Length: 276
Image (cartoon, rainbow, N blue to C red; front, side, top):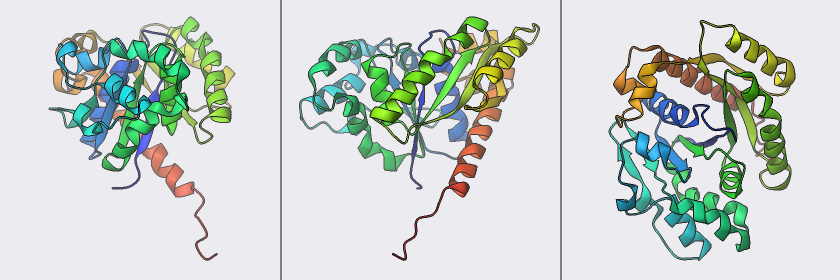
């Protein structure tokens, strides 16, 4: 297996479709033959619930357990927290215990790298690791960005959602300078698009005007659809719940766009001179 890629799906604003994007992109990549791990890095555990694990208190191990053991230098097999979903993807789940990590991490040495240390043994087992970040820019999200190779930013097709992009991009730049020099922004994904209105087109124009010169804005747009909202209570992705729907089709196209961009980056990457 080639070296895996870790992608943080992040936006400090809630309700922009981060969790749906993580689950849907993960399944679409798996359908393309990739081995995929999802990481729920939100104490609300929405991704864990969406994927069908409703009783989070009964889970044997979660991301919080892995991080706590790492902080205290205790051995814990990371595989013990991995759950397998019927749509051929794996999950490291989350629960409310993760919220306590924000406080606990303050006094930990190399606190920004705690999550990265938890995930490092899994990287060679997957092609893609997708991290569902919480809607804030606190220490847990910083840990996710320190763990990631790149960031995908879902943005709701509304003016105020686009307006908040600057703060997130500044945070990514700060993480790049101080913690993770290899962190890149893969692109901005427009979500919850209502094509009956001009708002999504205007939002994309605002994003293009303000950020298009430094960040890719994906061609794919994710439409708003009732079926996608319904799938969140079924333990199924949009592909299993409404495989012929517009949202499933959009995420299939988005996965192809992600794979194409990654293939082009690898092709254009400078080769190491091994003759020296």
